[in-house]
Image (cartoon, rainbow, N blue to C red; front, side, top):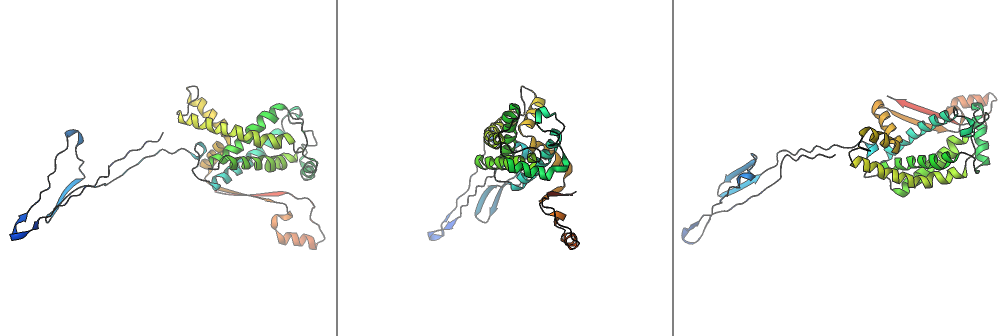
Length: 299
């Protein structure tokens, strides 16, 4: 997929011969003879022959060098070095997708998520999260499909995000373990259910294996021209499923072109010290449990 067009070949040949006076003012002259090349190897117009005094020189000088390279988007290539900014951007995308996933799960039946009405009560998110984290981890009763298929898959999604950003296998495993354990299991999902032993172990460990297989399959498809079963459409769908975070992050970044900053805080008033001090002086007390977030978006 890389096309390279070299417009000129760098070649420089110089020869000089000087005539020198020897005994009895006898002159010895040397002449440079240039033998023409066969017709199949004609000299380009940029070749030149110059004469300066008793010196002759022949040169072929590069005037232009054009190289056209088609580069793959970041979500389809593996960075040659660690790209922390790209990994951070993907992490923000994972944050948004995780919140959307939780919202979707609240709409699914209890038979699938095992979340009862109390788990879905948004008014008790803070106390519920503290209780769940305190009481966990436990051996959960989720469906095998969720525990042993979906969790390894999402562990692989975390893993490939780091691999595409230029991190090696072990570093990508650590990223997957951090995201799946602290961000998801003890973070987002803990608002609804107690952390699970299966999820803590299966997601990062099985996810690393699945993720490396996903990465290899993705690169094989790209090398074959992006086709699966002879179809570019099937290839595009497959590539998306192998790296959904990278694709969505790429779409959003290209369509938006702005920046976002997410800040998590455990302090009331979001750092507004004047309002906080006013409340304290008025006899109010800070809540014992407070979790908040602030999202700044620029265009």
